Image (cartoon, rainbow, N blue to C red; front, side, top):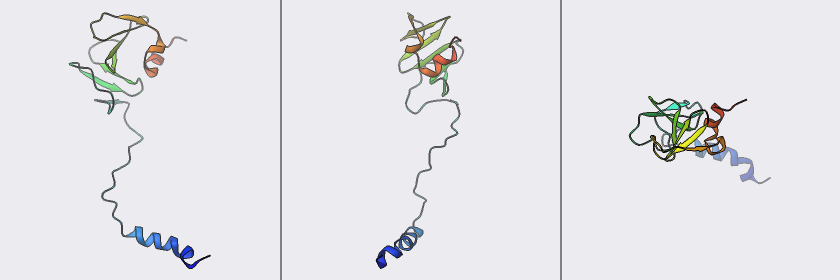
Length: 110
């Protein structure tokens, strides 16, 4: 083994030992709350009071029963799934395969 090969780990430690970690961004926490005001990728519904529910994968509209939003689409549970581009309709029937997975599982029938 060459002399450089034997001393490389020591040289790396000495080199890295003088580095400052102050400029490194913190890692993303793994314990992100399931409910948050906003999602970093999905915009909230326009003009509505809502919060992001990470378990469901949608925004939950406050003050509305079983009304959800994600990516310009509203979802409503009314003994079956419906979707609309406006929270007031017109509503179109759909099935659970057209609803975000977490949301569909919330109302899954056994």
